[in-house]
Image (cartoon, rainbow over all chains, first blue to last red; front, top):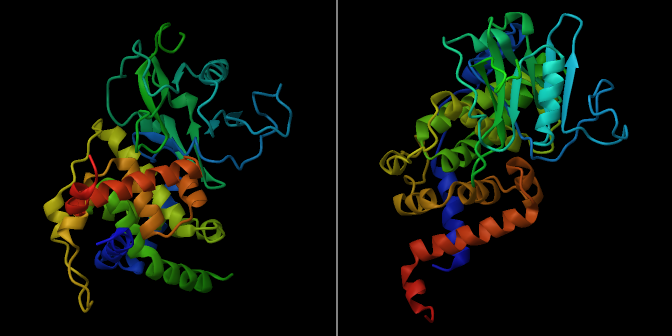
Length: 189
Length: 172
């Protein structure tokens, strides 16, 4: 077997694994996905903002925090506070975590942000399960996940921790959002 | 495009790419049940956003990337990092009913699953999904040259694993 035969042998394997799920089942499940999107807060216990290292395609929002940058520059992240008080966070690249942290805190969200693959060791998990789903929801916009924070749903004494996934070979870049106990060392307050 | 036409369009895309996407994700995550769940959910999301996804240059790559992203989410929820491939379960996968092909080659699958995760992902995207280096790099968030390097290392590892006699022929 030479290299070419090896590649052919690998390619042949793809014809031998078959999905048993019917398109009707997928479409039915897709309707449930749409329904989930219409109900904020049911996106699960964890929001993952993925693809931060992939080519940036979105343009900067007019309300971008890094407004000192030229308008043609692409933003590493965007934070937009809506009239209803919800905060939309879009992370495109793992850059300027301190800036994102400052911006979130300025918008009233006790937050810790790390893009090093390590969590802030000063942060402690907030007790209880299922609470994060009331604070965070995720929406796809322009094929990019947007994390929506509902600050009014944050329990007293709680904050949010944004941490990139472990930087290791094979990992798809992502950011996890967890509920943590607010403290000066973790979330600034 | 009407809903009926969209449905037909999506159904054709699903029929054409479901097995390749499943195999691609299977190689990446190493577990059949996990791969099936991830791919089903990703296709469901693709249908939920079909008007957007259908315009993607490589919708199958969108599905694979959505699956891999969801796998990270699963991992974070479970707070476990290592997925141990169930080689037995993979090797026992039957061919589809009526298909003339036999079951997957256990030796090849085992060799593939022994590759580092990134190399497995590159092999899956380049050789299974037939993405070019640029598109594969976009899916994985790495440069095209890194894709080439990972693929070259993967081929070398597979060669050594599956063709040990050639390894022995090499000058020391």
